[in-house]
Amino acid sequence: MPEVQDITLSVPDISCEHCVHAINTSLGGLTGVETVATDIPTKTVHLRFHPDQLSLQQIEIALDDIGYTVAK
Image (cartoon, rainbow, N blue to C red; front, side, top):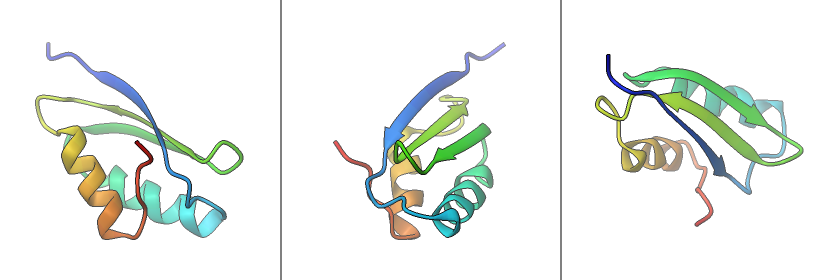
């Protein structure tokens, strides 16, 4: 069975429930994503995904497409 990866991304532009909904909807629709949890107070997105189906770069592009940048 392929391994699942957990990552937490820092996304400084998260500020409200609209942000949470937009991020969860966008990333949740990507092939290979199991769970998405966006947290306003810490401005983070926690993802559980299959790296054999989805790359970190693809995740960052999906966030960028909806107006959110991952802090490096």
